[in-house]
Image (tube, rainbow, N blue to C red; front, side):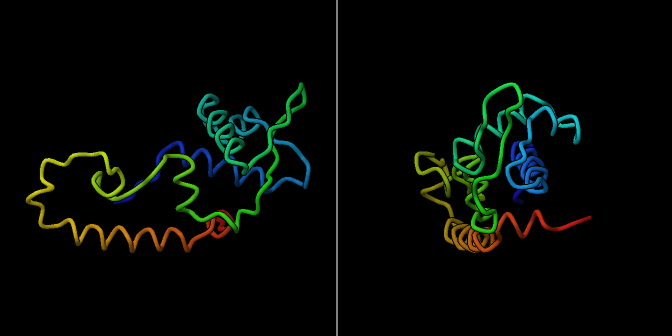
Length: 137
């Protein structure tokens, strides 16, 4: 079923860390990688993506880093995954209209898959990042 990618995992780790900081306190990719043993390149990349999408703000300089700029309760899991990965769907034919599935003309599960996909998207849209990240062990 739906599996969260490493890219999404590292982004969630970074956001959970950053949201524990005092307002205005910066977090760097290096700090996060040292604390959670995530790979630096991927952690830095996801933080740059989050900054490009307006979730984080990048502060340049020797003592630079990132701060949270959006309320995570206003970002759905669906929107977040699409920020990180692009359009999502449970089958290629459901999220990429340019995909030419060789079975499309004879497929007998397109309608059930569309129904399931719509239900899952509704679930992901109803869940905010704040709901997910406020959970503890």
